[in-house]
Every structure is written in structure tokens, then in C-alpha cells.
Length: 301
Length: 278
Picture 1 (tube, helix red, strand yellow):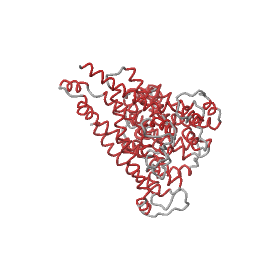
Picture 2 (spheres, each protein chain N blue to C red):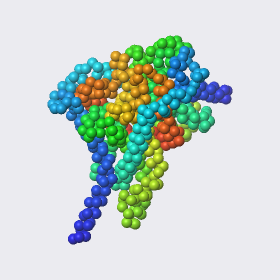
Picture 3 (tube, helix red, strand yellow):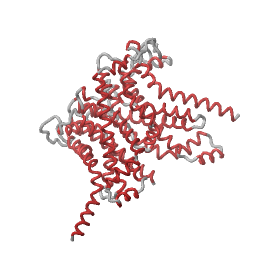
Picture 4 (tube, one colour):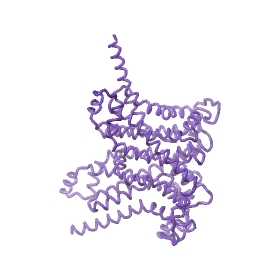
């Protein structure tokens, strides 16, 4: 009898072991990830949250008010521009730099130094990136000076407070600090492509451009798709650099979805409405992530 | 003929390589140069790379200002604590994922991996009420706990992969000697995983050091602010002291830059394994 008891106890202990190892992480994730998501969805159905004592349910009225809010659609439009242009430019620059770093024309040492310099923008924190570009983009700053040679600017060109160009300017800054991730990932991918493929195509007399189009791109496709989807999710979420450069202004011209949510919640204390927009952002990110996971599974197979 | 073609290609590629270097590196260089200029020379027209009066004044001002020193101490304390906690919790979780099969494995794994898909701003709204409810507003704990949510997934993913490469026989040897799983993990697996732990720790440090949004919202008083928020607070002041802002940016970037230069192989391996972002 005693023996059976011991065996059961050992079996329970064995079954429980992985959960014991995981318990701190799981508790943390339940309280600070799962619970908040449930809360934010709940908030989106309340008249207001966080700042009111007794909130009450108001059904879908927050959703109606968000979807009929011109500012919301303006933020969506800005986000779509910001995200698509950033992702496209990240791929182009990341690919270009990766090809340069992978070419046989340069010495190893040169390539190592170039790689370190090219990765630099990725190392800096958002507030440093913001402050650094604010310095360069000031009227009579270095950008004005450099572009005055090609007649694109004068001594007092305003880059961040002109609503016609401010969105393009913050997108440019985001491109500057985001491409290294692509470059490194693509470089790793390039080094994984078998040289035989290139050699046999060289025998067939294919030009460099054709080799790029018919060998490099198809071989890199899985990596490219994966990093693009991650970048989509990250760029939709991006907040810090835009917030510090323009705060969403002038006249909401650089207000993206994250900025819109932040201002609603932490400036106007409209937490319920902010939660509603947050739920929208969450759903978009989850949909993209599902594609990402499917893509990852395909890569593994 | 072929030689000439090759040479012109090399020239074109070299020009591109240099232009790329300017695109990536010039802003950083300009930040550094500006940090050495007196404030009234920062926007001199035409801009000059070198001024007659370059000095380390701005650095001196930043490093003797107790408020700014406090930002640095806060950042070091928070980042170091996050690294330690992340490694402890992450190693335990990774051990469970690597060595056991259990019914909820997939579900828990999905929960951990999904963190990246959740925009931080979504979590931040409920965090406001949770943090106030637990009376953690404007404390180090508010930052430590919320940063763990961001840093743990990468640690768990990487360490699970690392442990998977280590033979099960190592654990079994310990258990035959009467040791527990716990002993096997901390006495055998962790010591031989130091290289993996170092790279994960570096990356975690960088994530924590660079975090801005949570630090902005979950802390309030000057003595709780971290470096990224502190740099931004300088920007909000009426009289911009660009020299000091640049000096603080340079000093604030040094820890991550040093880590990056020393361990760039690890960073790059981590980046190319995908799914990571500072």
C-alpha cells in the first residue's frame, strides 16, 4: 500500500515538475499579458475606464464613435503610408547593403568595418534617434545646408513643422533606423545560398541582374516574407520616435494609430475610446502574426 | 575587356559602399561632433565640422548634474535587474520546454511567442490601472515587471534552443546520483550554457536600456526617470541646450555601443535568427 502511495506521489511530482519550472513565467504572463488583453477588450465596451469609479457598459458605442471619427481615419491613413513606405524602403536598402557586404569585390576587413557602420542606426535608442534627427533637421541645420547645394532646401527650411512633408520626414527617419535588421537577416540568407547555383548560371551566360532575379530573390523569398511580416507588426506599433520628433503634429499630419491611442488615453483620459482603437490595432497585428506563423511553418517544412 | 568591366564595377560598388557608410554613419558622427561644440556654434551657417572652441564642457555639465546622474543610475539598476530576473525565470522556463512534454506545452508556448504581436500601447492602458491597483506606480517594480514581459520571450526561445543541443544524459547523470532536476539545471546545464546566457543577457540589457514608452507612462517623478525619458525631457525644456542633449545621448548610448562592439557576433546571430527587436 505504502509503495503504491509513493508511486502515485512520484507520478504527480513528475507531472507537476515542468509546471513548477514554468510557474513564475506563466503567472507573470497571465497577470501582465492575458489579463491586460481581456481588460482592454472589456474597457472598449465601457463608457470610460481607469479614471472613473463606476463605469458602465455602453455596448458598441465606442466602436461607432471611433469608426465615425475623422481623426481615427486620418491616423489609419498616416499609418498605412508610414508602414508601407518604411517596409518597402527597408527591403530595398537592406537588400542593397547586404549585397554590397556579400560581394567579392571588397576585402574582408573593409566589409567588417562597413558592416559595423551599417548596423549602427539599429543600436541607438529611440530618444537618441529622435534627438539626433531633430538636431539635423532644424532650420539652418546640417540637412538644410547639404540640400541647399542641390536646391532642395534653403537656410530656413522647416522639415518637422511643415505639415506637407512631416509625414515623409518621420518615415525617412524610421527607414534610417530600421533597415539594419533586414540587412543582417538577408546577409545571413545570402551566405546560405549554394555557390553552385551561381556557378552553373554563370556558365549559361546569365547576367548579374538575371542571377539576382532568378536565383537570389527566389532563394531569399522565405526569409524576406518572414522579416517583412515582423516589420509590418513592429512598424504599426512604432511610437517612440514619432512621438519625440513631432508628437503627431503639426495638425495631426504625423499622427499614426499608436499616437492616436496614446493621446486619447494619456492626454485626454478617454481610456475607453483609446481601448477601442487599441483593440483594432491588436486585431490587425494578430492577423498579420497568424500569416507570419503560417509562413514560419512553411519554412520549417 | 573583361578586366576593364570588372574595374568599373568595383569603382561603382566602392562609391555605393562609401555612400552607404555616410548614410548610416554620418548622423552618428554629427551627434558626436555637436556634443563637443558650444551651444551658440551648433547652428553656425555654414555648418562646420570642427570649431575653434571644441571642448568637453557639455559632458562635464551632464556628469556633474545630480538629476542626470540619477537617470543613469536608474537605467543601470533597472536594466541590470531585468537581465538577472529574465535569465533566472527564462532559464527555468526553457528547461521545462526543453526537457518535458506536458499537456499545456503548446498553449503556454503560444502565449509566450505571441508577446511580439501585441502592440505595447495596447498593454499600457490596462497597465495603468493594474500598476495603480498594486500600488506600484512610479516605482522600480513597475518597470521591472512590465519589462520582463517584453524580455522573457526571447530568452526562453533562445535558451530552449540552447538546452536542446545539450544531451539528456547530463541531467540523468545528476539524477542517478540522487540529485533533483533543480540541481541538474543550476549545477550542470547553466554553467555549460554561459555563452548562450551571455548573449541573451546582452540582448536583454539592450532592450531594457532602450525602452521608452513604459518608462514614460509608468514613472512620474524626476528621481524615477530612466535615460531615454531623461534625454527626451531635455528636449522639452524651453531653452534647448543642444550640446548637453548630444552629450547625454552619447553617454547614454555608450553602454549599448560597448556591448554591441564586444559581442556583435552574438547580436547579429540573434538578429538573423529572427523575431527580435530592440
